[in-house]
Image 1 (tube, rainbow over the protein chains, first blue to last red):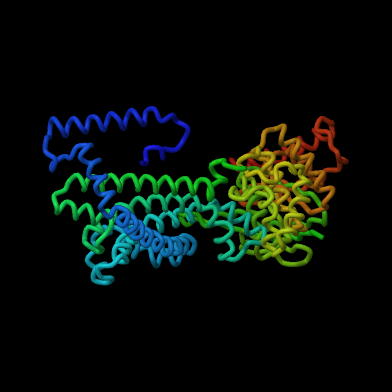
Image 2 (cartoon, each protein chain N blue to C red; image 1 turned 90 degrees about the vertical axis):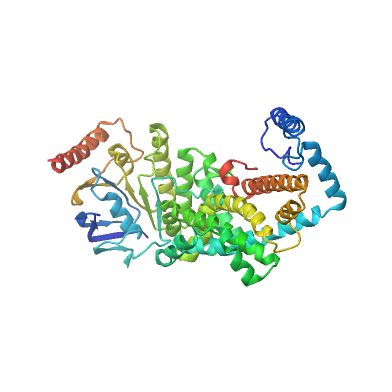
Length: 262
Length: 255
């Protein structure tokens, strides 16, 4: 899984070599050097744990729950971050008004919000979504702002000369499409941050399922091979999401930029 | 339609160190309907600033501009502009770029594409209507920019060094095409350029400006019938006269 998601036309030869070598190395270290399943489960231990969890565990519910937390947080971040980014990027007064607040709140690590997330929303899916929202809203907001700030003046002036004069139309027809590459970059960064916040948010027991929650759960049961299964799942799903977003954005929204024209 | 009355325009800029620079100081000029007028002069003579004020993109400190008797206070679809930089919207294909003005005027999809196609064929780019700007050469992009400005059927077309970034051959070709378009569509064109050759080739009149503060030094009539021959002696003489006027200006400015 995940091994064939690498984009481009490069042959998978090196990918296969690199992964095979890593797996063999891992197996040898675990079996002959560490020789302790608790400290370092081997590749075959992990594979066995995966088979077991697949058959009798809650892998699919965990994946589903985590993706739901992820989606709640990221959609909320888009819904809040993009409009605010547009406003501070376009209207100088709103920028002056909000900039100090944003700069003060932004450095607070998202995980520091967990106590309040629990106090406000209880041990719910929304509580996890909120922490993810805090982590991903700033990359989206800041990139939207940067995108609006770097709209070439000539596009705005050309638009005005052609009868696009109100702020609303200039934002909709000129600034937003011109800033789209920045927005896309912000969204990708945000999705990476969101994926990281997910684990921490779930570890605090906001729900009974989830990839992050299970890592903590199996650690408490001292089943480190299962912990490793969930870690690898997080890695591969994260990779897949990133690939999906990148592919989706480049091939639909930013066609005019990468040269994919039919 | 398209007569322009420029009366006593003054424009000063305040620099960051607090000093004010007089960019334009008392420029007045009457331009007739369908006339082709070029503005030349050394850098800093305010020719681009003047064009931007006429466009409504910049405001004069005093004086006013009348287009067919109506005061220009801001950008209006009656005035089209072609910029020096590539100003096509990269996220729109050629058809949608040219259809932008009509779209803003609220025309239906069918109407605005009809209109856009007419102007795209006027500049000879029918095969490229589905292409994106990055797929086009510099000359083609400026042709699209001209088509886009014309699609709103403005009475006045402003051009700010539109061919400045093009190579010499493309540039000459574009100049002939522009004259052809001008002949067919009959607009008043105000054209800012660094090239005296270009000004003499294109214009009915050439306005020579002097720098710091920007003023009109003299207005030169170009009585040569079109199409003009760059190698004709009359052409060369006019070019020499205008160049002489500009050099005199830069010398005085540098003293």
